[in-house]
Length: 65
Image (cartoon, rainbow, N blue to C red; front, side, top):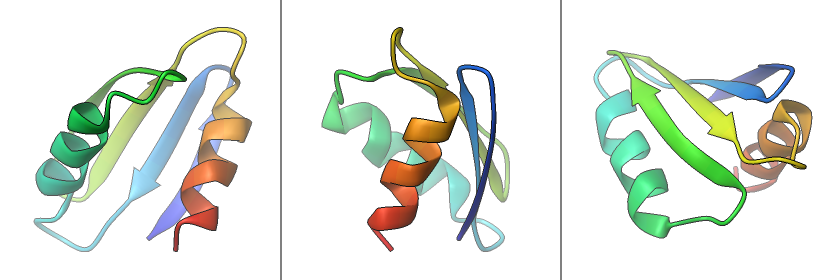
């Protein structure tokens, strides 16, 4: 998995076909700093709840690897 960020958004890149599963797990975790996710085949857009930034979210997911 790789990550990137911009503003209040974090982008997570997964192996092909894994994004929906991971996005669902993120949504079900009900993390207080996450508003929600949008998933494609291999990419997840994670929206941060203020005052959390996209960089903070990306770092959080990087640390889970």
